[in-house]
Amino acid sequence: MIQPSNLRNVANVKERIDLEIRVVYGRLWHYVTPHKLIGCIAVIGMAATAFIEAGLVFLLQPLMDDALVAQNLQTARWIPFAFMAIFVLRGISGFATEASLGWIGRRVISDLRIEVFGKFLTLPVGFFAAHAAGPLLSRMTYNVEMVAESVTSVVTIAVRDTLTVIAAFAVMLYQSPMLTIFVAVLFPIVALIVRLLGIAFRRYSARIQDSIGEVTQVTDEIIRGNWVVKAFGGYKYERDRLAEVDDRNRRQNLKLIRVRSFGVAVTQVVFGIGIALVIYMASRQSIEGVLSPGQFISFFSAMMLMLQPVRRITNVNATLQRGVAAADSLFMIIDEDDEDDCGSVEIDKVKGDVRFENVTFSYDKENAPVIDGVSITLEAGTTLAIVGQSGSGKSTLVSLLPRFYEIDAGEISIDGVSIRDFTLASLRNNISLVSQDVVLFNDTIRNNLAYGQLRSHSEEELMRAAEAAHVLDFVNDLPNGLETMVGDRGVLLSGGQRQRIAIGRALLKNAPVLILDEATSALDTRSERRIQDALNVLMKDRTTLVIAHRLSTVENADRIIVLDAGRIVESGTHAELLDQDGHYAALYRMQFTAE
Ligand SMILES: Nc1ncnc2c1ncn2[C@@H]1O[C@H](COP(=O)(O)OP(=O)(O)OP(=O)(O)O)[C@@H](O)[C@H]1O
Ligand SMILES: [Mg+2]
Image 1 (cartoon, protein in one colour):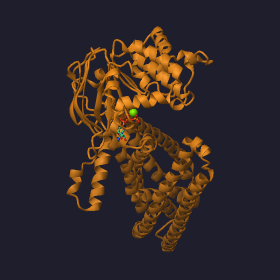
Image 2 (cartoon, rainbow, N blue to C red):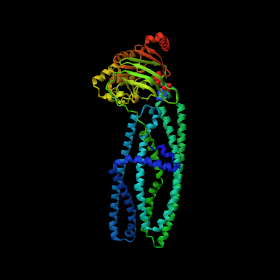
Image 3 (cartoon, helix red, strand yellow):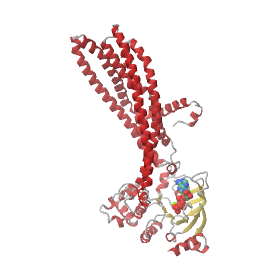
Image 4 (cartoon, rainbow, N blue to C red):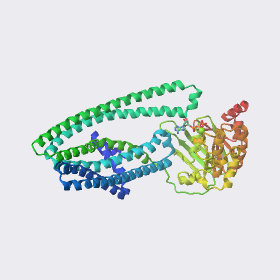
């Protein structure tokens, strides 16, 4: 990534862009250099292609002058073989170039993809809260392809196109120096016109990308939220919305088509005039006897050969910048800081004494703290229940223990060791978590239960966890049992079934510290009771932090704290809190009478 400090001194915009291009490509170059051998093949292939093509147009002169016009028998004999040899070589060099460039391109795509994916795995939770998923996903798919495409184009331009231009120019110069000078004056004028048209074209195409994004956005929303659309009769609203963005897209595309075809037409006219001038000059020279038909044909073909490469070379900046834009967004992810994992303490199974001392935390440092001076002492094997209004900070509080977020002040420790001193792996190995939002992967029930490191558990342990979490209750009714696919995010299951799998997963992990955040909220009272029994057995010999809105599930906790706006406002056992007749007692009475 380019450092802002490097850029501050560079006032000139063009210099700045050039510097950025150099820095980003310098960095991209590191993805290509490991593949030196294949790279050499590509370069040789490209160079060969350039010279072979120049050779082909060069040969047109003897073909025309000697074989066809002068009817020289000897030339007529060897020239077909020469052409054949050239096409064979052209085939070989073309194949070598395409295959090796393709190989490198695909390799760069894979390497970048694996690197970015790896980065996604180790970035802190806060990163994902701050970035929308859509753009992050498209970087994995679209941007990496763009980078590879741009890199291979730039290499092709630098080697093959440049050499083609040089070789074709040499042929032209050899066949007719006079005409070459004439073309050398004409070409830049044509190139300038083409370039100006190119700039206009790019301005429109950038806007068109935006409006295609709108179409995607609207479509994506109605697919994901199709049941909201149905339930609230959003058909007309959505149709109108799509019609609007689609119309914008269509009009911009039309504009683009007009600009492009106008550009092509103008370019052709300009070329036509240029070519007419060249032909006029050539026929004059022919009449004067300084240019043979063969020389003209060869010269003319060499000039045509140059056109495309010259066009690409003059546009190289656009190609470079496309690559920079795509690569920049990838490097931005790659350069993000990983989760801080500086601790070195590794404990296989902690005892489970958990302490929060004066812990303060805020998601956004400018806002009021979400957790405000919370102190809790929790002895190993005891259960702490956290209750409080929605938004009071319960989920936030428990997410600090596995270090999903870093606290601003205070200290959290397990067995007297600060959680920052543990390695992240060891810390999280000691914590089982059932989060408020159940996350299931598009896999079988079995693999969702035994996720990640849990894969190594025995069948017996798996079945026991599935049994205790009452997963088997519904799995036994499924034709494929544990091998049933749960669908994208578990959509094929009910909310309660998903929750039971999440509980089973936590049970299977069998860690000394257990966090249950509304773990049974989606279950009916009877299932909840049954799972609660299983959880009670499990909670006996481990430290548990349990969050629940239904107070009946927290009555038996060793201690209950009531959170309000990130502060502990009450603390004690169920009986003590009822005696205090404060928040908890009020909440309890409300639920009691409601039930
Ligand atoms: N990732 C986040 N970024 C910024 N603010 C957040 C984030 N997650 C939660 N908050 C805010 O922090 C506060 C506490 O949220 P938290 O999820 O801890 O509440 P909760 O007590 O668990 O509520 P509930 O009972 O509804 O689950 C809320 O005001 C919420 O808006
Ligand atoms: Mg919550």
